[in-house]
Length: 414
Image (tube, rainbow, N blue to C red; front, side):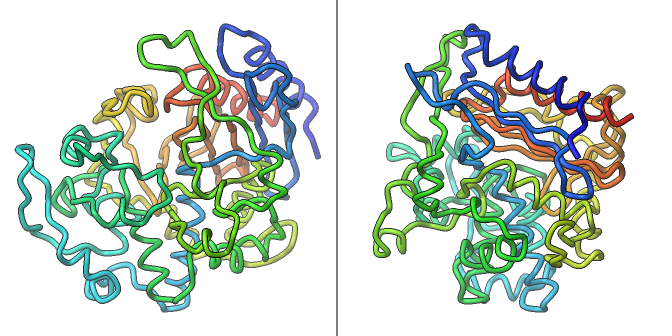
């Protein structure tokens, strides 16, 4: 049941952003749901692009959700852990499936490669402590890949297979291609492509038809335009070519067969459907709408356990803008008053103390590089998502709307 107070506040907030041309944000979708899976508030504001005569944004608009894919891939991996197909702490199984990981070397500041000291496990991959990075966040990795360069948004498995580690396994948290590797582990263990597994074991049980790494023709018709603020002139935002285009232009089965199923960032989705995955997690792995069980309660509980208690300030190490057209620099991922300890689950950040918006303890959240953000608050039974298609990551206007709309939901419910 829509909460009218929340709905009105969300509409007013989003429209104030998309109606103001100085923000450069042409359109936004926000959806929040409760434990019953029903919408607390949902609004599509603005248009699908900044170009002339673009269509209105709707709740059916499809977004490239980038790293919001990681949650879907991790659910798929944990389903295989439940079944006994995969083990979280068995490095030998990982190496049998992915001998490339056994041979992985660690990149040094001088560009040299050295042997790793510890073994890589599936748990490390899901908790971003295996030692991998992203070329757009890590200048050392970016420079090592040149003159050709690394590009994880190319729909090609080679981009993942060729990257060295940037840290010794287990020594620190760094965001990177870890979940892509977890997806490869799943594929090799099951013989099933990651997207096929997700469709069969998550989307079909939840009766969701618009979340896919190989978007359907119907989804492509609803696709939002991609936008860019160019470095040096943040006041200017314009339409640009899609960042992740190979799955969008693959038409034949032969073409689709060669698309890498990126667990780290390969999915496209309608936010109204994505939040139904979150609703299942609010209900300990059971869909409130279809009754399907996608995970056991103890598995969801395990995903919500802090995997890195010895790194309470991991998200305060800052993000450099290694590729400034893709990401803004950021001193902290989720600033909170009094700097409480930070946590990381399998595979998302945990705000362990209540947040300023009203979210409860141990709320999970994460984001996609085109400025999409989701949260899942099991304590208070609320989850939601805000979606845009604006580069680079860390857009202040979109992040401001995320905070404002999330706060509006909690305020209305209280």
